[in-house]
Image 1 (tube, rainbow, N blue to C red):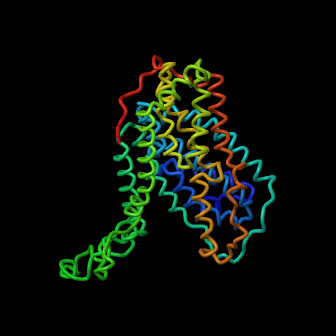
Image 2 (spheres, rainbow, N blue to C red):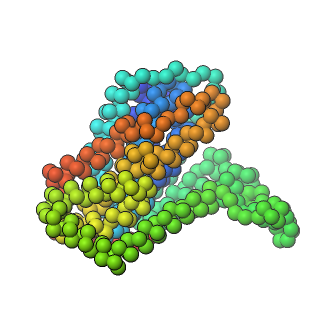
Image 3 (tube, rainbow, N blue to C red):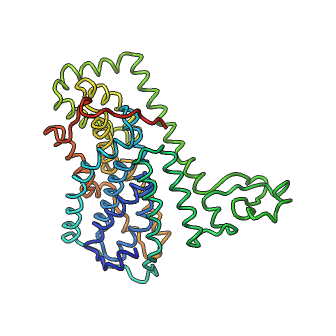
Amino acid sequence: MWAANAAEVGAALFPAVTFLLAGLLATGIGTGYGTTIAFVTLVFPAGLLLGTNPILLFGAILSGAVFGDNLAPVSDTTIVSAVTQDADIGGVVASRVKYAVAAAVPAFAAFLIAGATMTTTDPAAGSGVTAGAAWGLLHLIPVAIVIGTAIRGRHIVEAVSWGLFTAFVLNVMLGYFDLVDVGVSDVLVFMAPESGLVTALDTAPLIGAVIETVPAGEAGVGGSLYNGAVGFFPLIVLTLLIVAGAQIMRQGGGFEALQRWLLDTVATTVRRAEVTMVLGTAMVNAMVTINTAAEIAIAPYIRTLGRRFNINGYRRANILDANTSALGYIFPWGGGVLAGYSAMQTLPDEYGWFTVDMVVNPAAVFPYVFHGWFLVAVFLIAAVTGFGREYVSDRESEEVSRV
């Protein structure tokens, strides 16, 4: 917000800038869902204050989420696509840049054109929102550390850990967290019973920072680190069920029968095999609305089809990831779209000037997720023309880093 205010970004330019910033954040933190929720909560209202078209702005946020979810080395979709195709994560990300940029450039141009031509709204007044401060830009440092460390081939857990550590130290230095105040408890807090050892040590510096005393019935753990881990458990269970279903298909012969039909009648050439990969991932993602789970469901077919024609693991991983990342933020019933829509429904309670009429219908935004549509188009064109195609003999994938 500070940069947009300093550069005098108006309503017409704001969606294009939002696309770039959302893509940057999603690439750094590796989650398109988290980026969508954060930008809908903070940046979406800021755009409406300028008079930006709300549907186009929501599409820009989703497009940025697609960019980062597809390219980020710490994204779950990136990790799954690399691991399932026996490719190393760093090599996959490096080989993926050309496709991401090829889709991002026309998407950025589309947001510029649409922002200048689509009907805007009247800027909201009297909100009391300030433009922030330049110090906020320092938070790009942990993002750069995570991306750089992962691309250099370090373990994903190590890359994320360095990013978390740097962000924590940076927040302490900037005064956002006080080691003896409640700010740290927003990250991690242990709620201990009001009796026993904690009470005896109530003068310790950690009391009130990461340890709080509560009635015995309210004891537990909280904070963003804990909540983030807990939030992934439903996805973990869903993924396990999908893997179990796939294994049942293998044992029953359904997987082999479908695979043999594809190889004998559909994917008879390299070009047709890659087109089948693109369309197959799109079809599965339309049915399985969680993009990571959709990847796991279709990954064995992509690996088998690719190996039939000696297609490199990097290329297979890129085809697998691009479509599942893109379509998860396009279909109105997709997880990314619904995550943003759910966050948007809370805004009338957050801001007094935000009305229910400003909430965007998920069915209205899908034509404006420009980067998602262009990314799918890039891989369809690449499959037909052979752009970026690599064979196993062209480049050997390093041993995949299991996480």
